[in-house]
Length: 238
Image (cartoon, rainbow, N blue to C red; front, side, top):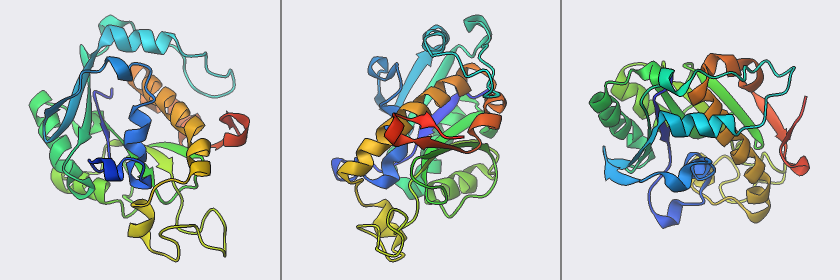
């Protein structure tokens, strides 16, 4: 069962709307976000949520579609961990693992009980992917995690940002186009992109709540890769 969630990104107002900060942007969509008491700890911003509050947030979700393969039932609050831990590393992306390792060590949380929320070049904008372990896709935050924990066996909730030029093949993709990956991930989402991203982040927040309250394995049939029709308010495409 997942006990620690880390939202990857870079600290500071100048990075707040960057593609690389998609994980942090998702955190703000959590239904209990405003009630979290963030404080500086473990080389990041840390907050905790009690099991009862998580169970209430889960109960408020709409039932999963009958054919989605997602189990709606969650264990009673008494069977959940007493607390769920949330972390926004402030070490900058390439040292994210240092912050996550500090929190995990203090609470004695195993790598397989950690969920990392991050941007993903390898999946298209408008897509979400929940996965366990696997490759790192060249992501510096994930590389830092593996270097610090000695394993890649942790959960990931990936928010697709695509590669430079993905939005308009052959015409460039705005700042960072032409293969400049660093420039791409460190550039801001455009206005139209932010509008399209909104339902993706909302869906991601719901997946995260379900992953905490239920067994995350139960969500894999539907969310190992889900493309969202952002023009239709986030309705999933089949």
